[in-house]
Length: 119
Image (cartoon, rainbow, N blue to C red; front, side):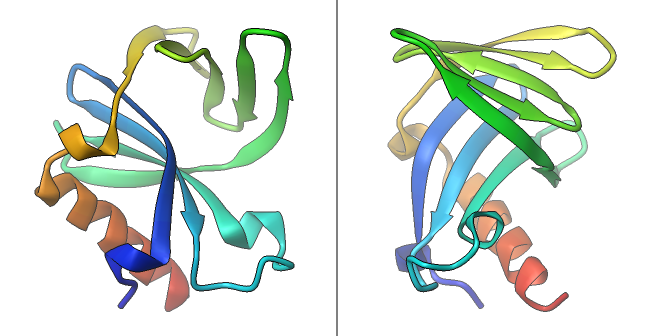
């Protein structure tokens, strides 16, 4: 099982019942493939399920970061984000500290990452 000390939360966003994060694995060599090191995960409280977003590309300009996934696109800055689902629905997100995320949700992320290891 993956331990909390073996991951780093790079970005964390939250909206009503949704927590979106980018996780970096610290237990793998730095020269590992990016798709093995970095994972974008989304926890949906309504379904109590974690989904891994399929990363496509990233860009940035002076103030905004952009991430494209098969499931939609994310634009964010230092304090807020906006996720546009593939269906066109737009979700406003607040950028938050991982310290404000409940232990139960962190455990869901860890459990999900552990399942990825066993695949």
